[in-house]
Image (cartoon, rainbow, N blue to C red):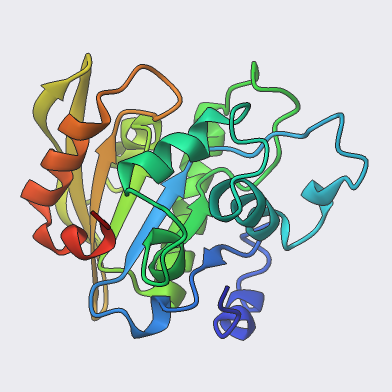
Length: 220
């Protein structure tokens, strides 16, 4: 884990509830990837109530993604690990990438869904986060945020490319876009939510086809 961005992240604390998880090699990566989840949920069985802490995302990624705790119960991180062939390698995905949840408030249960207003607010917070982390690519694990992208950036400012549909895989379009903030140019790619039925191999192939740099994050 890398905390060198925390001072800058504290400057946008009015917009984010939790620090992003940042791999220890992220800052030195030639091609920086930010993995974007959708929502955190409160776990009524977790007496720590860690969703109240700034470190919530980091704890969750560390426990469920990196250490693979409760692995058979939490499909989301299990599927991300399979997508990137994660096996706890020194230069595997969790040591090189960062992770951020788009909706910066906890939902009560997995049956709750963020509102349209939550997604619109999410883009404002996301914009501030990428100014700090400066990723080259953001991989969205789920395409719901894409549904409000064009409305958020309807005036065309800060956008190099509006949402574009590509291949239709597992009943979901692969979507792309691109944001520009000053010198920061960040590509966005949206895939099917990994907790649902998903052919990981097909999506992995498409990710590498669109961004060959991703290959450096995959360990054979």
